[in-house]
Length: 150
Image (cartoon, rainbow, N blue to C red; front, side, top):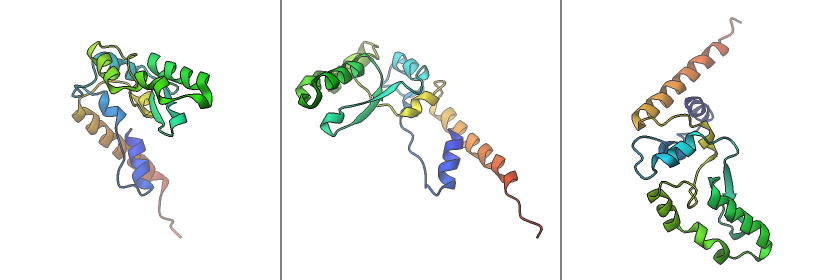
């Protein structure tokens, strides 16, 4: 959001990374509407971290394949091998899911910020909104800081 951008800049950041949010825009032609709708409807508990046992952790949207991968990792414990979950992690499986408009087929990276997605705007609308919100946030801070008359 724009307020998060303003906060990051106030803390000295040169910018922010915005990834997941741009996947839910009209111009994103990789994800079909079923995937974008899943992002719009996602909440704060709708991402999971997979592949921890392999020191290759990845945060993904919680879907059927991600939950199956977690089940296998849990059930196999320290004996889990990549072969146990490899079929679920293949990028080709995600491509198949996109072609079938099935957001449960394949795992797809997704940040926790997915919970903040409420619509599917154009990229221009999104950037304009973020900038406007950032300026509004900065304007709301100004009254809190005033020079002392002393």
